[in-house]
Structures are given as structure tokens and as C-alpha cells.
Image (tube, rainbow, N blue to C red):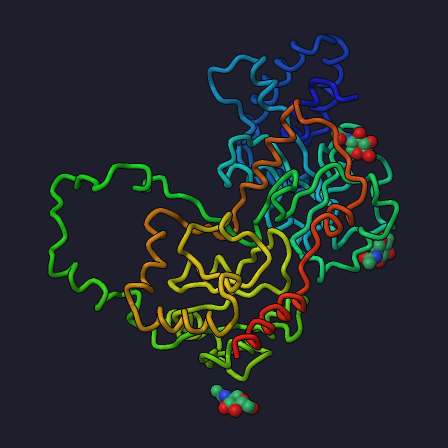
Length: 447
Ligand SMILES: *[C@@H]1O[C@H](CO)[C@@H](O)[C@H](O)[C@H]1NC(C)=O
Ligand SMILES: *[C@@H]1O[C@H](CO)[C@@H](O)[C@H](O)[C@H]1NC(C)=O
Ligand SMILES: *[C@@H]1O[C@H](CO)[C@@H](O)[C@H](O)[C@H]1NC(C)=O
């Protein structure tokens, strides 16, 4: 039974058995839910006042943490709210992490309510926990697809619960996951939470996101009037803008690629090898013989500052797959040269990146990069978008959306017939072999 008292989540206020039994006996006597909630809240607040003046406070917080509940006093009621609105607004939604995300039991996002508050979510009455004994009190149960284990699934399932397929890996790396092959996983998941934009909850937490600045002049009239006391920029400075541009100060190298896998489904290695015939490419890591030493020195950590271009090449050409490499480059002052299967125009503003697919072959791309290298003004045009946009690393808005959706009574029931169908049959990744064949043909035709 999920009674109304359950809406306020007694475990968040009490760990003491005597108080629970006191409430239980009051509940028996009073019976009417509204009175009950009010009484409960009064006792709850009273209890907190008492307990906060004793040395038990820390123990109380610790107990809460075991339950994955908030450390803060955010459960205390805001003033000037009547009981009804509180009851509705504070109905907690519990999110159970059935698996972790690799070795992170807290999914990297965190436990309890606090991460939702810290993320600045509009709706924050969600609680995340890894405690499986809370299964039946959970509204959502999240499974990291790679850790979906047929011999380790919940034994009981409630109708209102959403089972969530959680994944940030492209097919070539996740091809063998049991979740694609087992009938037990068919008609099992209600929602998806992945980097694909057709997910029920779009989440790019491990990757990144771009956001228009609140103060962006894009929407305002031009030229902007100057703030009081500010004078126009001196013409002499403007005329020398390009020559002395700080963005270019350290850049004496051309294109860098950091390689962690020698052979990929997307065949980026073949493309880059071909590109290397027409321009210098500095290859760090497994595919090249460059290493920055000493490791973790300031210079190595800021190595990108020395380059004009960064090869942001994905391991596979899959829908909506834009990994953290891209955002790392955008955040730094370097132009990403992208090799990937996403519609980049939907992810980043115009003139913030260069796409290999915009060039008939690596040779033309190399020519263009060298043209930009020689023409600083053309090169610097690729940074103008920074006036209007910010790059976010680790965006958390997917979790906010999840919390909002769990609170939305209009969300219809939904079930995925098969994850294999959704994840790769309906939108297959493009084999790099095919792409390389096309561009090499083009090269041969030219010669
Ligand atoms: C799956 O779960 C079972 C039962 O908990 C466990 O013994 C097994 O090691 C798990 N398999 C994997 C691949 O984690
Ligand atoms: C990398 O290795 C190749 C072949 O082994 C060699 O020709 C080249 O000079 C090396 N480059 C650097 C920067 O050491
Ligand atoms: C979730 O999926 C299960 C299994 O197919 C289904 O029985 C249930 O009605 C679904 N619930 C919601 C809320 O979509």
C-alpha cells in the first residue's frame, strides 16, 4: 500500500523505532490521510528541532545517507505553503540504480536528492539510491546496459515503475551485451536514457553540451551601446587585432591526433593516415610515436595550445555519437576537425568545427587546413561563436529531465519491444570501410 503518508517518505525524517510506532498508533486512531500528513509533518519538524540540538545529528545524517537520502535539510518545509500543495509538491520519486555505471555505484551523478538540487533542476523531489531493498518503493530502476545481468534482475516488478535502459557506448563496443540477445530483455524496458536524441531521456553527461550564453548579443540589436563609463576600443588595437592575437601566441604546430585504439569500426586511422600524406599530422599514443614528456606537466596538459587543429575522430560513425573529445577541443582554443556519424550542425554553432565529410577527400581537407594556417583571420573566424555560447562538460540536465518526467502524470505507459532493434537495427552505424572506399576512389579519380 502506498498511503499518503508514504508520500512524505517517513524514512527521511525518522530512524527511531519508537517514533515510527508512535506514528503507526496515531495513524490507526486518526485514519484520515490529511490529518495524518499534517500531524506527521508537525512531528517531523519537531523531531528535527530536538535532534539538531543533540549530538545525534551526525548519526541522523549518516543514517539518511545509507538510504541514499539527502544530507541537507531540504526536506524541511518552506514557509507559507498549505499542507495540500506540500503534499503534491513533495511527493518523492525514488530512482534505484540497479547497476552502477562501470565501477561507479553512484552513476557518477550521485546519491540522494542533493545532486538534483546541485544540478539546478526545476523539479528536485527525486532521490537516487543504490539500495536494492528499496526496490518496491522505487519509481524508476536504472540498468547500465553493459552490466545488465540475466541472473541478477529484480524479482518483483510494479506496474507504475519505469525500467530504464542506460547507455553511452556505440554499437561496435557494445555489440556483445547480453541485453541485445536475451528474450528476457524484450518488452522489458520502459524508457531509454542515452546520448541518442530519440531517447526518452536525452543525456550527454559523459560527453558535453553547448549552451547559448544568457548575455549573448545574438538576439540584441547591433551595435550594442556601451556600458556607462566605457569608451570604444582604440582603433590602433583593432587594426592589429589579428597580428597580435593571444589565441595564436603559442600555436606553431598544425594538427594533433591522440590515438588510443589502432583499429576501429569507423576507420579513422585509415583516414588520418591518408590525410598525413598531404600535411603534417602529429600522432600521439598507440598509433604514432609521439609522447609528451614529462607526463602531467603543465606543458603536456596544455599541449593543445600549441596546435591549430585537433583531430576529433570518433571510433565509430554512429547516430548522435559526439564524444567528450569534441567538447574538450571546443572548450580549448583549438579547432576540432570532426570525423563522426552525428549531425554536428545540431550540436555546435556554425563555424566552430571542420567536418571531414565536407571535403571530397583528405587531400582537399589538408589544403583547406593549410589555407587557414596561412590566413590568421580566416582561422580566427572559427572562434567567434565563443562570444555567444558556453561549452559545458558533464551536463546534468538529463537527470533533471528524468526527474521531471517521473513527476509528470501525463507520461503514457511505454515498452520497448527489443533493445537491439532500437539501438542498432533501426539506425545502424555506418561502417568506416564504406566511407574510406568512397574517399579513396575520389582520390584516385583525381590523380
Ligand atoms: C551475474 O549475476 C550473478 C548472480 O549475482 C553473478 O554470480 C555473476 O557473476 C554476474 N555476472 C556478471 C557477468 O557480472
Ligand atoms: C616516427 O617513426 C617513424 C618510423 O618509425 C620515423 O620515420 C619518424 O621519424 C618518427 N617520428 C618521430 C617524431 O619520432
Ligand atoms: C513498463 O513495462 C512493463 C513490462 O513490459 C509493463 O508491464 C508496464 O506497464 C510498463 N510501465 C509503464 C509505466 O510504462
